[in-house]
Length: 115
Length: 116
Image (cartoon, rainbow over all chains, first blue to last red; front, top):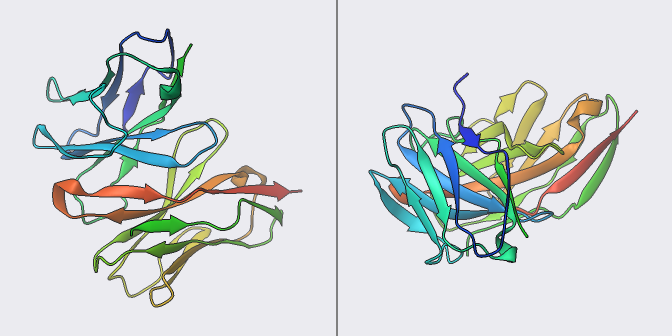
């Protein structure tokens, strides 16, 4: 079964450093997303991406965050200068359409720890 | 306001029994979708079941069924014949927005513990 692949699975970084979280969505999917889950809390939407541009972003997604689809397969989330409160699990997701449910697929996440 | 509410922070169930996890939602959009995800301690989000707002029949996937009551805005997950491996956090989510702006809104989750 096709899957969304995220790397790395764990990342520890120093406060103030830049991090890039990588995702390979399902190959024929058209819509891409990043979500965040702070430990013990609910999953929160960060940003959606379609047709090579951001289609929606939440208030969490401030100027420190950026997304990019540098080639036909990768989808990255960059945090420019990490803060302690950026420590969370980051999930990438992709979907073929916005009408169906079963095609909305999450990756296994990257656990980011900022020290 | 668009919102998902899960009122059960934790639930216990005996192995082989059925359990219902509650989820209510609030939206004014006529078109939306409702999801349930399982999150084991390893952290990944595992898709369980989906119900579209226009679907006439309740969704079923193996031991999982979704009790969709549109008028009451509820989308409860029923797990039949619980297994020890069902112990996990369960999240209800709602897909809102159309086209490229669609996104999922999650509830706070229910931690299910299956007892032998």
